[in-house]
Amino acid sequence: MPLNHRIAFVTCAHVPDVHDDDQLVVDALGRRGFEVTAAAWNDPRVDWQRFASVVIRAAWDYHLDEAGYTAWLRQCEAQQIRLWNPATAVLANLDKRYLRDLAAAGVEIVPIDYIERGASQSLRTLLERRHWTRAVVKPAVSASAYGTWRTSLATADADQTKFDADVARRSLLVQPFADEIVESGEWSVVFFDGEYSHAVLKKPASGDFRVQEELGGHAEPRDPPLAIVEQARRPLSRAAGPLLYARVDGIERDGRFLLMELEINEPFLYLRSSSTAAERFADAIGRTAAQAERTQR
Image 1 (cartoon, rainbow, N blue to C red):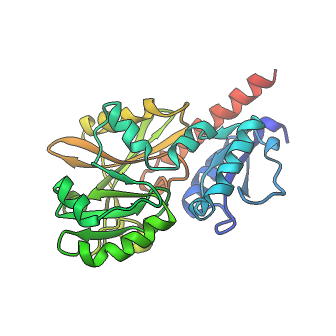
Image 2: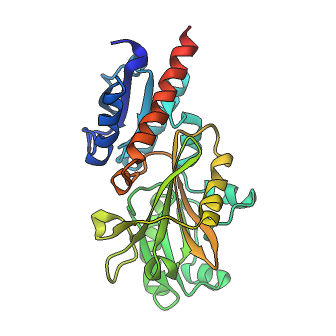
Image 3: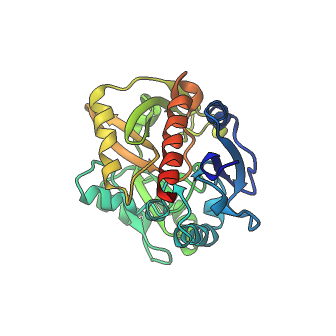
């Protein structure tokens, strides 16, 4: 098969096969004459140069081997692998301190306090200084709510031991607890090639605050107001390179979209929530393959 017809969907050793949601895109690409291969980023046998486009989809164990994943991204960059999203953009996105850079560029975010690994920090003092009565602690490099937990002024002293143990191992983010997530939900707004595709509103299970489906959360297909879509689009232009896809997560507060995450590494895209999303994603991937063909000529 010609190079420009070969597509790789990047998976991982923990999830080596194409996810059911992404299978919709595989089928759509097949109808367009493309062959899609699932290949784990941490499989040293893979020859990534065989593919017209390499699309990161289920690299869901990257946070368990940050050094290995970073090395793989840099190798792709050095070998000029046609990686999507581009290695430069993904490398800049792995550590959630990128949120501070977006805030400095004028993007409205849910506030954060960044705690460097090994720092000595009183959790109570932090919350009092920021006037946060409740907060969420999460690793600066994480996926699927891994290592994420709640704290408050009432429990800060009791939580200090856990906080100290976490920050001894990794850098952390602390954010004020967003009531909107529990009350009205968290938006995930999906873009392909910078164009709005679809969105879902995610809500946690009763008594929880984490919206991931594997933790009991659920997502409902919704069309956000146009103003929310446009505000969600703003962070895309701040990425370090063009983006094939992006999932922009955030909350709506007083008609404003507050960014929580710009997911451009390996986000679940909720393709089954829209009857045409997989077709749009397949078209966007097809355009990257066509670009690779033109580059070879």
